[in-house]
Image 1 (cartoon, rainbow, N blue to C red):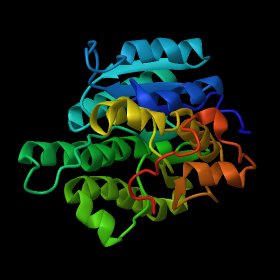
Image 2: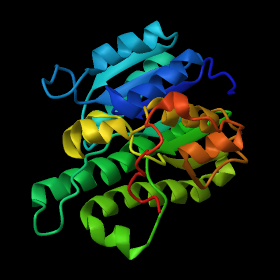
Image 3: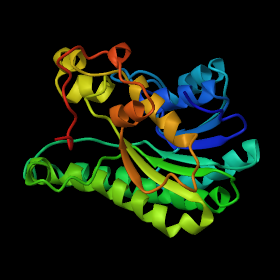
Image 4: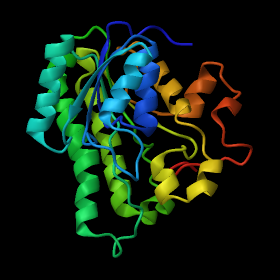
Length: 273
């Protein structure tokens, strides 16, 4: 279904677990080198995995892994991850902006600290990581920026549901679509990817409904398989799009999604009408 990523290098924010890890493992199976920049260097009793357990899984899947403990909101931390990636792998072909914080509280219930956290990770972090990688992306023969962010659905339903989180995620999409045009002449693709349904992750389990939500969620592998279709495509012709995972799979002939779970009553994700 996809081409090889042999010899290609990905730098990803987050990736210790969930969708990010699933994307990293799918890329590893296609032969990629993967740097994971994340804060989880020590085990967290509430969350599975660290960057080191993720790196071990990546290498077991057939890729090369470089775990870097750092904060995507911090410019020096991001530059350190990029520098270490160049030192280890010699270049960067793909940036995956995966790290996010989520709080769906309304405006008065949301603390300023949580507001800053979401804007910092989603918008500032996406900007810092991509900006630091751009000089190296320009040297790649098939450079991609992929952000895990939604379609810009301006329905009042979504704008009013959780304005601060919506701002953070839409900011990721706007930056990425902006880069698609800004760096089109350099052959660097900028695309976004969003799940059609809830995805069975720790965030869904802990914040969005526990076991009941997990039961109507698809597995992270559906997003990973969709991501591979984007990241192995021609960057010069496939750019400036917001993809929905199930739709891009259908475009490539994959319409039976039963292996991804969720049952017949899967729950649509936010921002999907």
